[in-house]
Image 1: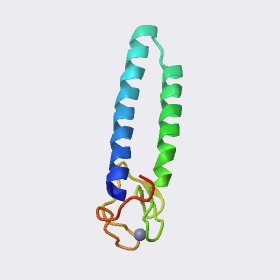
Image 2: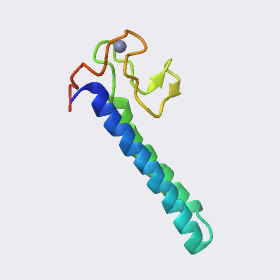
Image 3: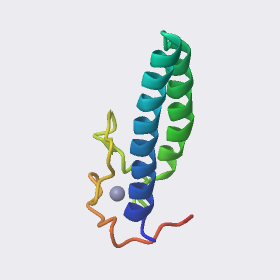
Image 4: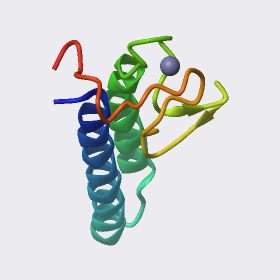
Length: 96
Ligand SMILES: [Zn+2]
């Protein structure tokens, strides 16, 4: 598995998590009438799941695949490193 594939797998899991989280909030809101606690649980869960995003770095310069110019977080990983231009679809992941 390459760095990009591993990061893409994580991105897919996160998108699925967001979708499930949104459905969970809607369902709790429909059942109980208010969803602030469900919302807090989902945000916390997604935040914890998203910590893994920090492990997806360029093997050459350690720039994170999910950050654009170091500030903006992307929902999808970069195929080519924005700093050093390494093709991340060809580099095997170190800890996959
Ligand atoms: Zn790089």
